[in-house]
Image (cartoon, rainbow, N blue to C red; front, side, top):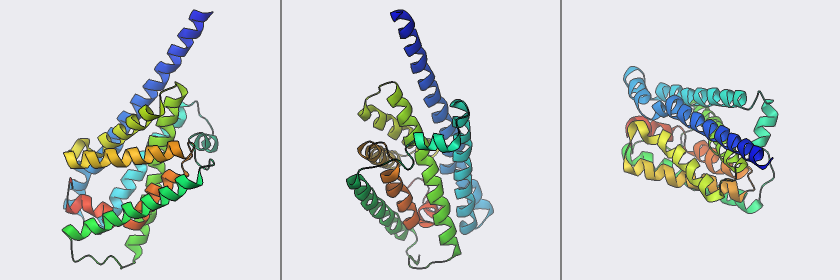
Amino acid sequence: MENQTLETNNEDRGTVWRRIAVVSLLLLVLVGPNFGPIPSFLGQVMSVDAAVITLLFTFTAGFVIILAIIQRMLGGMPVREMLRSFGLGAPSRLAANIVGAVVGILWGLLFMSSILQFAPETNLANIDLLRVVAALLAAFGALLEDLITRGFLMNQMKKISVPGWAQALISALVFAIYHTALGFNVFSFAFSIVYGLILAGLFLWGKRSLTPVILAHSLAVLISEPFATMLIFIAPGA
């Protein structure tokens, strides 16, 4: 009986790691090109404004496809139930939410200030249709990304008793790899690791609720778009 239980646990661990490996590979293949060859191509065939919107759509499409595959992996679990299991709408610590909001504001301002280094003529106060559409698309994409890289990956690891610090580190490494693998430089990789660790830490601190993560991530892009995506075209690898 004990041997049978051990075999079942080993099968469960194997299933979880296979899911994590498949999703990590999908992130690299479906989302990774958005940080390398796709912007390079779009920048040659269309204006920066059109390229920004197109790139944000490709980000979103990649995450939607991956979530659909995850749902199949989980046996066709109803979407609402699946999202709840990832921590969407779950109760969180107030302190984690506050810190998440502060991180989101500061990160968004950092991106906005960065654009001035490469395009000092940019009018950060201008509010137009491009800025509104880009901000909404990016915030939605960030939500989908957090569902996958925090909600799914980290909760899968929890199922097989991976320690919280290791969950955060693996999640951050996956996050950094698909953000930088096709346009690698040390600064971008380190930046992505730090941001990934912050988001994973907020997820753990917030009792596995995605609320503080969304505040830190989606709020940052709501503030900084379309400038954050423009940096991919204006300063590749920055």
